[in-house]
Image 1 (cartoon, rainbow, N blue to C red):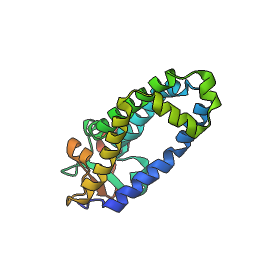
Image 2: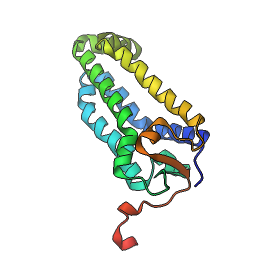
Image 3: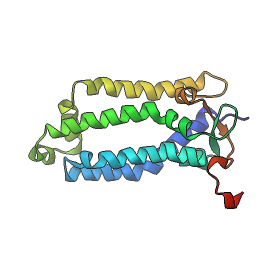
Length: 188
């Protein structure tokens, strides 16, 4: 097995970011139209995150960024990633993101429509963070620590596993192979 390296995985992370950029633009525009957009976006955002980081990983062996850069997520023995492992890989970040979204929704509800619409994006963001619960600041720090520790962990082990790989029992390998767990029987 040939393990994907740090730079290749970082490239996939950046590519996934670019792929999701249009959705971030929708969120930006939606926020400017209504202070309730974050409430409306909560469930679709949750479903999209699970689809992108769990379903696509379980079904195809990786996110689009990994697949484009010729990588696949596998179990440590090289077998295809299981749905449970795909879920476990994403679990910590999923919980942190949902808690962050809830904190910002709480902050949004503390503002009036007039206040929301009168502020430019950066001023609105600053006010939103001020209106969020006090634990939001600690949560933001925790998210940053989680993301950076993932990359640091990649640098210091031979198989280039991130913390979420250790949690799920997975590795990221160079090269793609279809996941037989989900192959259509007519294609076999």
